[in-house]
Amino acid sequence: MDLQIRGKKALMAGGSAGMGRATAERLAEAGVELYISARREERLRNAAKEMSDKYDTAVTPIVADSSTEEGRKALFSACPDPDILAITIKPPAPNGDFLEVTPAMWRDSIDTALIGPIEIMRNYIPVMKDKGWGRIVNIATFSAKNPMIWRLMSGPARSALINYTASVSREIAQHGVNINNILPGMFATEGAEEIMETYAEAFGLEKSKEVIIAHFMEHNKIPAGFQAVADDMAPMAALLCSPLSRFIVGQNIVIDGGQHHSLF
Ligand SMILES: NC(=O)c1ccc[n+]([C@@H]2O[C@H](COP(=O)([O-])OP(=O)(O)OC[C@H]3O[C@@H](n4cnc5c(N)ncnc54)[C@H](OP(=O)(O)O)[C@@H]3O)[C@@H](O)[C@H]2O)c1
Image (tube, rainbow, N blue to C red; front, top):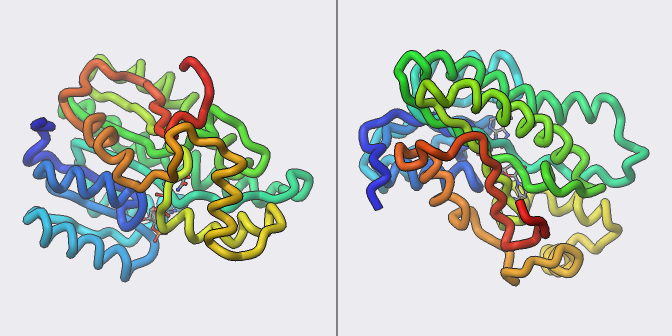
């Protein structure tokens, strides 16, 4: 299928690893000029070079922390006018006992998972409106719709994010600018691996990858029967970045192997 985005400009905020990287790959494959950002420089530069070599397209790395004003300024000046914007972060660490969650932890979660994406969208929406076309995709989390006691640093801030995009997307769709969100379940990514130790601590497990994954699979029944990889969501993200998705507005697409049991 031709996504009809060849020659467009895309910014993947959080594009050096995991689902952001997989989405960036699908966009590069479809022929977009790509900008990818992340905080850790070496992995980011390697990812940009690998994608640019593989897909023979320009991939510009931007070292920037989306949760800070300074980081966002770096994004805006390096890539002032994308046609396509996708945004992600790394999975926040499990919180352990909910009674131990402090105001500082809430502020960090809100800065990273809510204010960062909102401020990036708020900067680019007028640019896209002026062009008369744009696509925005947030890669958030299925715990926005499916609350889990150990995902307090991830779910509540994303519930607010999808509430925000539900309103804003309907305000701007008339200008050809669509916002949709992908809500992933459990994926084997670099970010998931990085929080495994904290997961083990939260559930009192031995710090072994096999033990942790077995615990996760047992306690989070996934009808599909396996833990996904990043490219299990990237084709959907790329479709939402395309003109082919012109009638898809303000939606939250859960990709979780059927784990979240609900009608909508
Ligand atoms: N993996 C899962 O099982 C899972 C489950 C449910 C929901 N999710 C959600 O899916 C999304 C993607 O997760 P993932 O597992 O793909 O993560 P990942 O493998 O850690 O990839 C995250 C990417 O974003 C970058 N990033 C993280 N924080 C950033 C920041 N503040 N500013 C700029 N770039 C940042 C990372 O690079 P740097 O770290 O170098 O900045 C990396 O390129 C997250 O929203 C996560 O909460 C994941």
